[in-house]
Structures are given as C-alpha cells and as structure tokens.
Length: 194
Image (tube, rainbow, N blue to C red):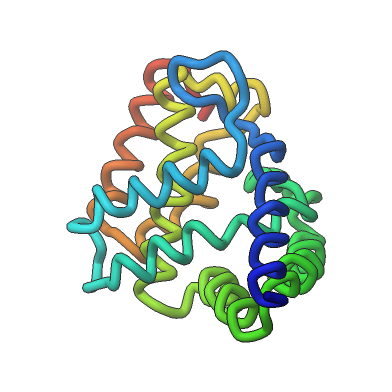
C-alpha cells in the first residue's frame, strides 16, 4: 500500500506540469503551451519521425525519456534555450528538482526515472540524441507556423536558432537539413531576423 501511495502522490504532483508555461504558443491558439502538452506532443512527434533517426533507436525508450525529461520543470520552471543568463544555473535547479520529484516514487522506480532524465541530459545514446531532435524541432515548427511570433517577441536571431538547435544534426541529419531550410525561409519571410 505504501508503494501505491507514493506512486499516486507522484502522479498528482505531475498535474503541476500543466501550469508550467512555455514561451511558444501552439499553432491556431492564442495562449502559451504548457509543458505537459509539450511532452505529449514531442513524444508523438518522435514516433512519427522515427524513420529519420541517424541510428536505429528503441522508440519505447525515446518516448519514456521524452515523457520524463521535463518533469523537473515543476520545480525548476521552463528555461528558454536562447536565454544565456537563465541557462547559467539550469543544471543546479533541475538537479534539485529531479532529486525531489523522482524521490516521491518508490526507490527503484524513482532511480529509473532519474536515469532517463540523466541519459537525456548527457546526450550519450542514440535514443537521447533523437529525443533531443523532437524536443528542439517542435518549438521551431511552432515559431515558423506562427510567422516567427515567439522569435520576434524575444528578439531571437537566426544565428541563435542555428547555433542552439544544431544538436538536431546529432540525432537526425535529414531533420537538421529540413530545419535549416525552415530557418532560411523564416529569414526570407521576415519571421526571423538575420
């Protein structure tokens, strides 16, 4: 019964992820996306785009990683990838969050979830690299299909989008080529300043 109570407490704590707002807005909606929506969307994106992974990947493992990797934002909040100052202490904030949040689970299960989070952060496996592709691709798609709204509001430049998102190439050369063409088109259309 104690195990079940720990698991229920964790599941209820996850509701807080729905209140963590991201900088991007979903296409067709006039509100910010929350991190819970983002996690679901990128897990689905990864399933759809699996054929573009540079290396064979265990998609079940990728999906687990994508569903777990942003749970730390409950305590650490979402950190915009283009905000250098906010990223300075991101690891410390997220590590503390991982300890607390995964610590709510029974020990072995908490260790499994933390290991998934650490694997994603380390980017040391094909699965982690492809998970990063999904995590980075979706906000680019949102920004592009909203005529650069988020990029323009936050004064993000094309070189920043290229630099920060070049990790996509580590997981999928084809999707990185696609992203580069989107960036070029966004610049041409005035969605993104060069």
